[in-house]
Length: 185
Image (tube, rainbow, N blue to C red; front, side, top):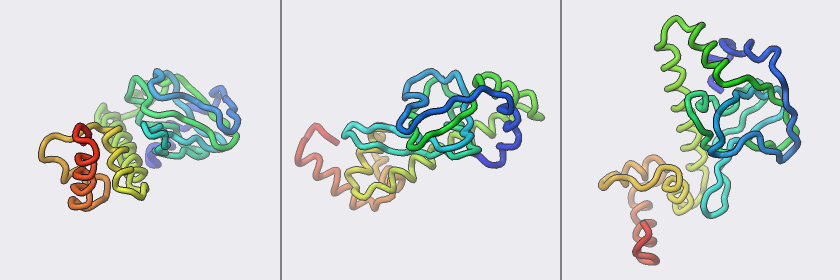
């Protein structure tokens, strides 16, 4: 959650209905329509993305007092799954209600755009951190390519920086892939 905004919208959830999820239960899935906004009351929700190799990439863990997937306020569909590891209670309000509240209480439209930009930057940073936590260059590269696709020609150096490896390490991995499967990047 973006801390500087928390008090600004927290009261929207005061009389909101609550939902309790058991350990391992899913709050929403990737590609579901974003119709609701959730606030964790107790427990925690992990935002995860399943990769093609079956590994799970945890993008963020929302704890008590956190908004779940705040960048989703500005999206039509979720980009990950929200799953509990422990019993969790969330409050829920329609997404439109929170967006309207933010628009009506902000002194200008620029504040909403700043919140949206910050939420997206935080989402990207969380993703980058989780990719960088993977040990192998191959795993980092696989996660990056699955989430963002192939870079433009000449942009592999930027990818190396983004996934936290040296350009030579990335180029070795790319060469190994080309040697094993010429159709694979």
